[in-house]
Image 1 (cartoon, rainbow, N blue to C red):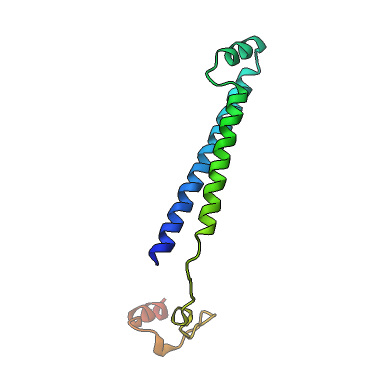
Image 2 (cartoon, helix red, strand yellow; image 1 turned 90 degrees about the vertical axis):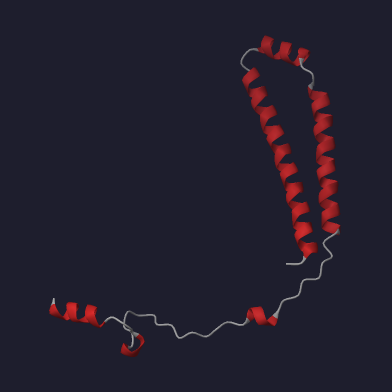
Length: 121
């Protein structure tokens, strides 16, 4: 495969991993909020003493989303590689195929002993 294509795929893979990590962050935050909904006082205390409040968290996540989107846009622009289909790859060998259980005797090799055993049974 062309090195340009491999590099492009690798960059795309990294961007997808970053997006996956971002979704994990959202999931973790949602689960933490669900755990804290049980006791309102505990929730208010946790939010008050938290290093990151909801506004700061939202801004941080918005910046991460924007960075991933810009990275994906750059990757999309860089997909100027020239892919051509090769006619040699498209050739298919025509092999005679049987669609039933009956086969020609001349195609069977080395089954004489098995044939004798079946006939004896």
